[in-house]
Length: 371
Image 1 (cartoon, rainbow, N blue to C red):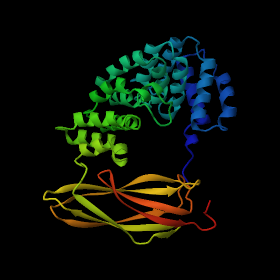
Image 2 (cartoon, rainbow, N blue to C red):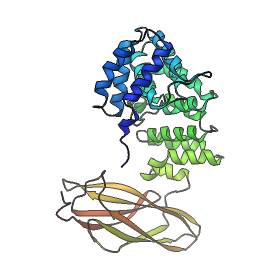
Image 3 (cartoon, helix red, strand yellow):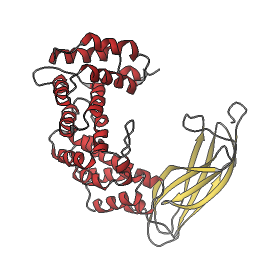
């Protein structure tokens, strides 16, 4: 069994933090700090463990943030000596987030120095939320920094919907202020940075699909292989949802001259079980057609309504007048992210994002799994 994530931070982390701070600031009351942290840390989960250490630092560090920031900066690895790295720096993020508001330049400089040793994306969020224009003006200059961790922080830290971190509601509503950052990094030499740009655009697409589809359309012509991968990855949510322009950006235009026939192997499925089906395609035109075949399962909900979820099928090119048959299977098995309910379900076939065929089937649950 995998080790629980919370064990990434523990009593040893608190002791390492106390030792590091003591070395650079002799006035630090190491004993009082540890007395505040050690008896309580095991009762918490990962992020709360970091916050406990951060809260104790706030009590025992200088009240003046620039002075405290200088102490924390001196705890980081230097050319001449080792320092704190990894998950021990989560609490530094949390300290800076809480104490650095009102000292934007100092706080961002510290996060910039920290990020090569552990991500600073957790600490930067509140600063952006509180002082968006001023923060983005500074962060925007990081896109040319020689350190790729700093460049990645410019894109990752500004993601509107960054997992595990506070959401940035202003950028969820209007992401245009971060588009110059993403454009500047779209051809970054590091895959680590480009992947972050793609993820940020995918975040934006959840609230502003047309904006991201237009962004991709502007940057796709003449795109290098790396840029094309980034644009496709940025469009993954849009493509999965069948967004017409997003599909057209990658050659999947609506198809008026390709027909599809859906054939179910069985319209009664036991749980756990498998739905097998075929999609028979026919290109009725005199031109080749590129076809993206996806399917949606409309799951039965507790109230009897249906809720669709799109799954990826496959892509193929049909020659003029060519016919082809695709065989697909969908497994129904216990998973933690879905509760299955017995009753009518629907299978829907999508060609280049457009619904072209559907069929109903019944899912039967045994007594131990039916809800």
